[in-house]
Structures are given as C-alpha cells and as structure tokens.
Image 1 (tube, rainbow, N blue to C red):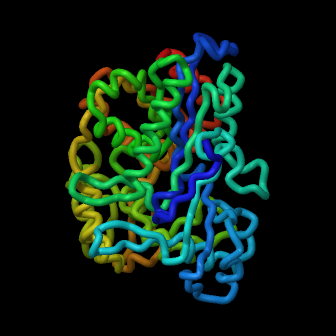
Image 2 (cartoon, rainbow, N blue to C red; image 1 turned 180 degrees about the horizontal axis):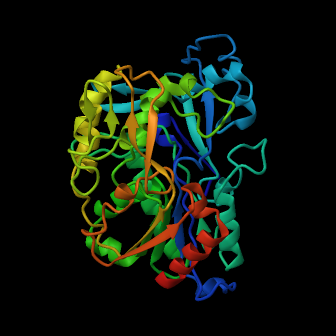
Length: 424
C-alpha cells in the first residue's frame, strides 16, 4: 500500500485519524504474532499529520503565504517549527481553513489547497506529526507499549490518518465526501487487519474524537459485517455528547496546544471547520439536557438546547444551518448502540470546564470557568452518555489522569492494554 494518500478534499476531513491494526496477548509479556488478535487504533485529531500542496488556483492573502506555491508537498499540520514564527501563523490559518458550500451542503478546502495524509496504513504516522521535532506525539508512547507486547507495524499494527478539517460524517440525506471516504478507508483497514491475521475479528481502540467517528462506522454496517470483523470496540476519552469547552473555543480560538501561538489568530480558521460544531454540547437528556446553564451572562443563560441562539450571539450565525442539519441529527438525541461489545474507558477526577460565566453581556470578555468532573477536556456527562443505552457494555474509570495522558501515562496504559487483552 502506498505510504501517502492524496485527496483533494476539504482539509476538515483530511486529518484522518490514525488506525492501528494489532492484537493483544494474555499478559503484558510479548506474544508471538500468530497469537494476536488484530487491533485498529483510531486516534483523535491531535495526533494527525497533514501535508499540503498549493496549486495555481491558490490566491494567497500575502506574498509570504504564497512562497511555496507550485513547489510541491510540505507539512502543514502540525508544523511546530514553522508556527514558532508569528509571521507564519496567518498562512497556517488560511491554508487550514475550510469552506462550507451552501449549494452542495458540504465542506471543501480553500481553492488551490490540496491535502494528503502521509504514512497511510503505517504506525509511523503516530510517531512525530512534526518532522522537525522527534518528541512531539503523545500517541508514540502507546505504539511503543503495544510493540512491547508483540504488535508489529504492517503485520499486526496498521495505521491511517484523517484530514482533520473535514473528516466528519453527515447524517442521512446530507453529503460528506471526506467523511464518507474516511469511513470507507476505516472499513477497508479493519477488513485488511482481519485478513492479515487469519480472519480473526478486530479490536478497535480509539481516542477522543476517534470514538464518535468509529461509532458512525459501526452503525452504518450490516450486522453480519460487525459480527465477522469486530471483536470489541474500546473507546478512550470519547466525547459522546460534545464538551462545554466547545462553546468557549468558538469565541477564544484553539491554538492546538501550542502556547506560543495566539489562539485568536486561529479563530476564523477554527470556526470554518466542521469539527468545531461536533464538539458543541449535546442537548440530549443523556448528556447536558436543555435545563442546565452552560454559558451564563448578565442578561441570559445558554444551555445545550440554546446553541443556535449562542452561535448568533457570538457572531457566528452562519453556522446555525450546518449545526441544525448536520450535527443535531447525529448527537442531539440518544446514540444508537453499535451492536458490538464495548469497553468505554473514561477519565475522572480532573477539573473540567462545566460552566462559562461572564460578569456582563460581552461574550468577547474573559469569562470565569467553573470546573466539574471529567478528564480536563471531556465532561463526565459526555463520557458516560452511552452508559445506560448500550448492550454488552463495560465501563472503566481512570482517576486523576488527563485527556491526552489516558493514552500516554504508564498507569493508564497498563489499564488500556489489560482491557485490550481482556477483549482477546
């Protein structure tokens, strides 16, 4: 298989979650490959790699942004080294921007911006999202631990990346070229993992947003496919019903965890990505409901049932249509069971933004963040949203470990690998 997957699709879909095919032995000791059940690992959006090529159709906002036009592929996400220069941040934001086309009801890249996912099918994609920094991927720790218990890249471990900006599926009746392409790639990788391992069914392990994405794969496949190819679904830190922080980042921006980048400089780019709408808190009674105030101002409060009004209030009214037509049908109610065995691993005991409180009515002001329970990113209400509705379901709580560390901390990894082994 080629090490690159080139797709001229919206960036929003192109930071494709990485998939890892491997299997778990019966102890933490290494096992022979023939003893392993394959695993497919689908990470969240933070561990992704995205290359970009600027064609003649690209109209840069400045000469600097057009310097690499016509000069081939280069790393866009996440180019840590380039972003250390503030002059490069506007170009990064511009090239990461997605465009929602109301006529086609779908998301696209900015014209002239082509993107591809490197290392498709290989765990090398987990290693270092920035080729200039060899110590930047939190998922690398998980890969190394899996290798210690017998997993091998290309044999019992496979991997795939998603073009993050648009890699979100849409409900029935709404197009999503990139999301559908991702689900086909994920389905094919699961089948390939099984085929490479003697027809054994696959354990699918996900982190963060990889969980809801993979859930969409399950519910869109016939029962015979799930029974044949999926042994167990192991989501870690999955935001089943969005997060309260999703409301905050639509105002403050998201700097992708890079403290030297001004988050506000990436606000418009972040808002353009469909992922920003997927992260909004769900009004489902199983999650945040419609009575609990999440954003509090002097004049009015906003619950998860008031998200459309909130989008208008922050000057992002153009998102109401996509939110109501593409997000609410997927996450506004109870999530249908995947009809496969599930082990849901959640983080607890870490302060997680539960309410956003403004002293006045200015939503551009700096609010106070009131913390509740969760993993520091995903609210416990969202992490547990599927607990009472899914069959063959096992819940594992990990205390005092943050969102990313649930797949990097030694104690958390011991728990995760034991659960993978349990599935075998």
